[in-house]
Image 1 (cartoon, rainbow, N blue to C red):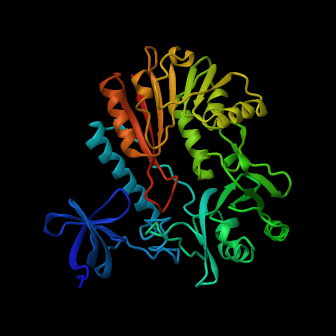
Image 2: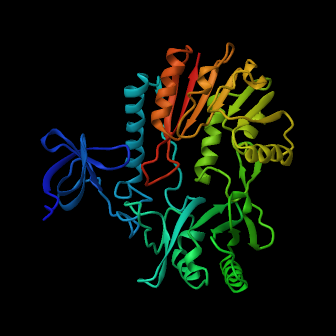
Length: 435
């Protein structure tokens, strides 16, 4: 007979980068879901590994004074959030500690000055997201939600307080909608995309939808004021169902630009934080008339066009050709004529490209989680004196910071965290490097 997993009485002394508590019974790390530093608990060990174990709290013996009641009834089951039991101010402090530790451990650097953490509204902020969908015969119900903490399962949500309310308060209605479809077994996911004045749902469907289902979906969209789009295949197959034309766009007030995007395009998840982040990046880059600026990993032009409002000339480089085309269209949309865009794979050597050989005075980097290591093999060139680096992963930022300081002669002048994803363990940050 298999032995039950043991229960240990432990003291939780730290918080991991992914929001779990850390205990060290007998010296081996035990990562405790839902645990906070300063707590003592009975913890059931749920998984063993060579260098660490995992566990969950069975009984809380000593409660941290920082612990609060999570707002969401699904906290602890849904994997969308990890930190709702910690006040928002303490969450962002924990994220700054994660960034500082990564700088010290990986990059062997520290900023001369820590920026004040950048925060915005902690609830109802998600304008982009992907909900999993699964029809369950035993429950006679369509489960709609994020993945559970155990990612094999879909969380059966009734509400989501981090999604914008137009969607987050309608999870049960969306579940009933899917359950009423003839194609209920053929809907694996729903993508959420919201602009300033339009909220869209993109339904992925594995089989063609009949007229009755199309009518149900259109009626739901009309009733709730949600645009409904269908995705029968890859990203290029997305087509509006209701209304016939869907216009997604958002403004960036700091630069008086308005960016249009497609429903599956990457845009920053948190609209309020994006406004603040762009304004901060502009200030840190200190763009002056006559400056030449290179924006790498530019996407739709989220930073490129605001920078172009202040600079002499700007060039943006992005790996996805569709985003490059829409960035150029956004430049035309906003009457910005001092910017050019290029499609290039920035994970490989681009040192021979004309844009890479130019002596750019200022660089802006906004790479994916993997960071900008390949770019830093050939950039910056002589003459570059300012770099602003926007990061979605503290480890890759710390690694690249070490490269900029040790190999390229820059100083890490300022750095700070930005709460792009409140209540999650995701760490977004920004750093200024100068010669």
